[in-house]
Length: 218
Image (cartoon, rainbow, N blue to C red; front, side, top):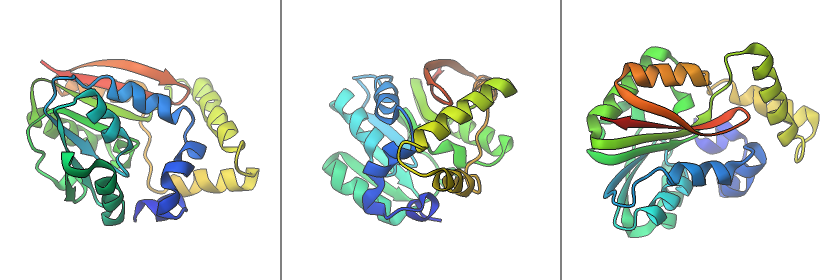
């Protein structure tokens, strides 16, 4: 399923509509990009989408080039127009690709498409192999709390954000539709999986149900 179908929008609307779906979207991407070293020369973006995170990373790492991986050919064309000559693209699901060597691997709202713990662990091991010594994985995603009461508050806050733009019926329909392809693992589970793959991991940013994790290769 392409991004537009998954989100229930026209693809040309993505960069505007994503902010109505995800609270603190720009702050989250800015926080993620700031974790990339200014000296980085190669960045791999998993599920690059329209290139919003990659563009920010290239502003931080002025000499870097990006390899953007995405299974949606139409959204890759949008990213190509946005990023120009500083990027190259791979039309494939990021779980199926042999990742190139890189100083940083980044992802925004992408890794939650991996449905199982085993699949996520396999991906993290693949990323670690691809990273150069001292390299980082930066992931911005939905990472609910373990505590059930806190998780419910986080979910209500997300729904409240949706209700700023959409009716109650529309908001419920969006969340229900996304649940068919989105598999949110708790923040604690993500940290534990990364540490089990020999990453030094920190929560670099957190707002409600969303977080930015940075995992460093020793």
